[in-house]
Each structure stands twice: as C-alpha cells, then as structure tokens.
Length: 273
Image (cartoon, rainbow, N blue to C red; front, side):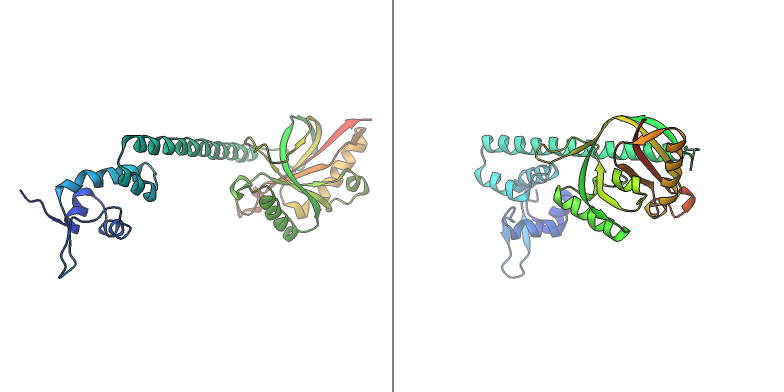
C-alpha cells in the first residue's frame, strides 16, 4: 500500500490548500516526513493523517495556530482540555456579541418599517415616552461637518464601535436656546443605547415623561421651521418646555436617495402651566 504522498496529494486527500500546507511547514506546525534534497519536493505519510486532522479540527473551532502548535508540542490531555475550555469561553463571548448584533438588526428593521407607516408627517402631537439610556458628548455643534467630527469624538471617548451608531445618533438643543429661538444651536450629540453598557462607561438618561413631537421629511438643516411650528402649538395648548429637545434623523440619504423617504423626529419634554 502506498505510504508516501506528495504535497498535492496530501492537500487533495485532506481538502487543504497546498499553500496552507507550505505555510504549516514554514511555521513548524506540520512538517513533511521527508523532503527531497535535490528538488525540494515534500512527502507525507499516513502516520501524519491524524495529526493534520487534529490541526484542521482545532483550526475549525477557531483556535489560533500558535495555540495549536503549543498543544502539539506538549501533547497531554490536560493541555488539550484547557485549550478547548478557553475556546469555549471565547465562543460564548462571540455568541453573546452576535446576539447583540442580531438584536440591533431586528430593532433597526422594525424602526424603519414603522417609520414607513407614519402618516402624520408635519403634524405636532404629544406622547408619553419611557426612560432611555444614552451616551452623550456635550459641545457646541453648528454644522453637519461639526456633527460628523463630534460623532467620532463620541466614539473614541467611549471606545465604542461605530456599528452601534447606525440610526441611533441624535442632537440636542438646550432649553435656553429653544426659548430664545436658536433652534440650530445644538449643545450635544448622543447615541441611544440598545445594550447593557460597560459599568466603567459614564452614561446619561432621558427621563420618562410627556413630549411634544413632530416628524418631517428632511434632515437637521431643515429643522428650524418645525421648531417654530412646535412653538406655536405649545402656546395654543398652554404647555411649557422643561428640558432639552432631542432631534434624530431616522431615515437619511444613506438609507434612501429619495428625499420623500427621509424622516427626522423632534421630541421636547413638556408640562402644562
């Protein structure tokens, strides 16, 4: 029975690229049993089949090649169990992270589908909103370029991945500026949080309560007219502002090129006089 296989034959038998076997040889992870000194051809034997199977199995589990190499050099059962246990913990961590990502997809899909059903565009209304957790960067923001820079600052400050920001970013206008009619003078950028936040991260919250709201087709640069519309509604209905406004674009040009799809919401906490 044949017991010497070229690197090409070994690759085919184990469904492993030749390039990978050459790399394993280079890093001393899995070396051929024989190398022809004249032509450099590598040869393997059936005695190495199980070793390569083990390497491929551990690699499939996500274990780094360095850890696999360390295990093979030690070759004891305790080390093998430790290796599997460590990778199990890492897999559990990745599963939790993927569950968070899945939840974000589901939340975003639901929000966009609900946004497409909204019919009271441009109409002022009130609603009770539950408490929400946010991370927030307080600084003056007067333009879209400043907004983009502030978002990056926020991301870096809290050491958070930008993928959590998609569709969750908003701006605030202070109560004082609202009362003065300075509707385009934003005083902070925030991100609505969907997941539990690291205890070391300083979070803020938006209180539960009654809010006056309006949806409109546009982005932040077009908000002023809608603030004025809210202003008139508050006077007519004897409400007063008790906190900063929240302004968040739910659908923008990065989601749809059609402006009639754009959707921004303004929310301002209020109470009766």
